[in-house]
Amino acid sequence: MTVPEFVLNPLSKRLFRMLDGLNFKEFVAFLSAFSSRASLQHKVEFIFKVYDYNGHGKVTFNEMLDILRDLTGQFISEPQREKVLTQVLEEAGYHKDSFLVLADFMKILGNSDLKMEVEVPVD
Image (cartoon, rainbow, N blue to C red; front, side):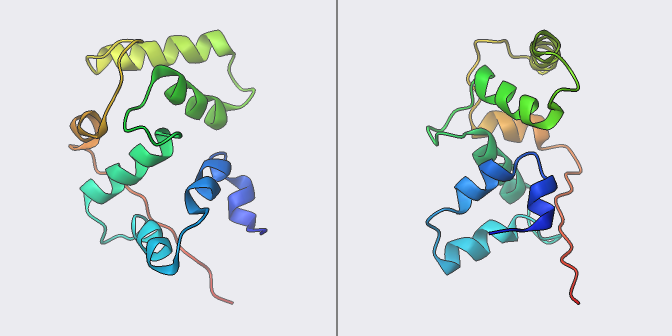
């Protein structure tokens, strides 16, 4: 499957893994997180699933570091990534050994104006 927008997305492998094995109803539910009408709760749950790569219900420092690595590529070094992530976690009241669960994601992102909208061009 070749979708040009997915090729540009550094998280495309994770998103494709989330799509694997979905039936049509589940696929529509997956896409609904990108709707302007989706609730903040729905969007945060989706983000949590992207971070929780192995689906065990908690996100570790290494899983967050993997996402940061995917997003930054070669632009920053591994020690810089670890330093940034450690600082962000500490500012949010967590530490490197913390496991974040969905409720933690809601606490952190719940007051944000989270935008996750996708426009699909129709030719």
